[in-house]
Length: 449
Image (cartoon, rainbow, N blue to C red):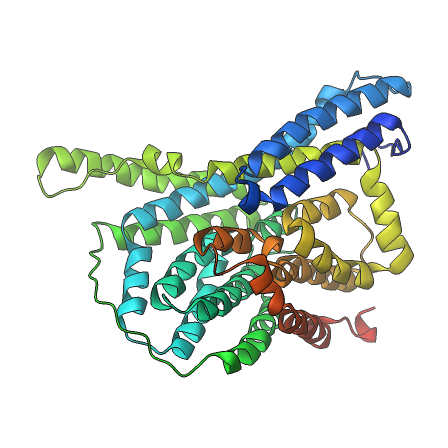
């Protein structure tokens, strides 16, 4: 059951202002889904909705006699949820920006483009790299990188670009599902301690199946054609390997803070950012002494963080928090988990995330904190299930994940909602197969009950 700061669960869902708050959220999220059509950045409607929803919460509390004495503390409680997520992502995005600035991603792009692979080889290589890179660099960054490759190699062949983009989205989302750092939803589940670092590896094979099944079927439609090789040389900048090492050390620090010290992972990430800051300071000193030394401006990389995405997460978390205070998440928990059980509810989450995006869906589930099982083994199995379904369910539609939405913008006119929908049945088949593999591998046996 959903609990609040004072331990009481308030059901204000029938209040008129609560209904207005729900309508505001629906309208705002509809604008987010239509971002590619109306060219309105996704952060703007949800930030506006967050403010107006909390106005409705305050009025509803006053109208029903609950008062607003502790409303500020309730708001701060939800802001704390965002603060942990923000600090973690800010450090990760800063390192990704620094790695990109040193042409590492461009070098990978140039190598693939100039290698002279056939279209089928490009399809499999970009999919495999998406699956491998996503657990570390996150699914959005990975999709943009591999999307640039397929649009360059497949120029003049829009049908191939569309299929390859679908493949990249599915692979990036699947790769991010078994890593605490591969997707916002897995990060949230990890930070609240529902699944520990090593336990995510239990859904590695189900995630791999989720990508391989649709990829194997889609590759049959790709002609055995070889595009013209492109020759371009990209020079890696000074310190590229050192920045990657510092990023990996930072992730290791975050894991250590969480696993050994029982401290929040974001504290380990911010500590790891100082590695880069110290490196930047030494490079600034070296640049004053040696002409060939390149200065490093850490704050420039911080400025290059995807702030629209950050503000979007803030808006979503505050919107969902406001709806939680009004009792909507409690109702949803009863309707899904109490009525149908954890397995059906968790499988349904994947379909919901294909329409709504997995971030607000997972945040809502974490706020509900439903009873997932009667013992520890069953509870872990169900949390791994929802981590899997929320992570890969968004692949069924192009608007279901940040990776898909981003590629619709970069491959405009070729990778579209309709182009992705054409392959939705095979993606759905991969979704079902991954759930089945998870059941075969990880379902608790009677002996563990």
